[in-house]
Length: 144
Image 1 (cartoon, one colour):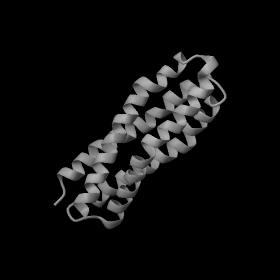
Image 2: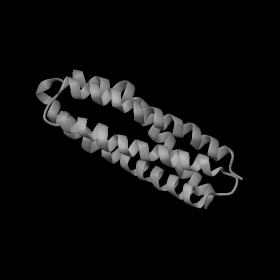
Image 3: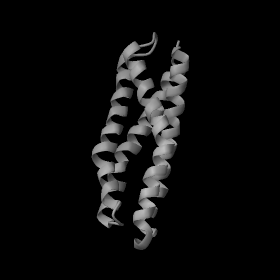
């Protein structure tokens, strides 16, 4: 069971790391080029469609990180497992408290300040997922 959970954990984390880097470097910065006239519709579609792509792996990542931390498989240091879970919690908190409010501001139309804040605060998730990716690879390579 541990191998299966570690595989789900690794795949979901690596997937989300790729997504967040694309969003950070390409997608969010391009918001400013959508245009005012269609931005509210674009933002609504962006939010809805992105949810379909990111929610399943985010939930899989959260559940697998929690399972690993709570069951503490042999050979995997508890500190590494709890650090991984803490990073997932930080990502979810950042999403809920920092990025979602900016998307809410953007829902009524393009707001340059909200877009800048979205890009700058999204670095929290980008760096946290990058650290999680390194940790997930390390966990998988050090399992017994």
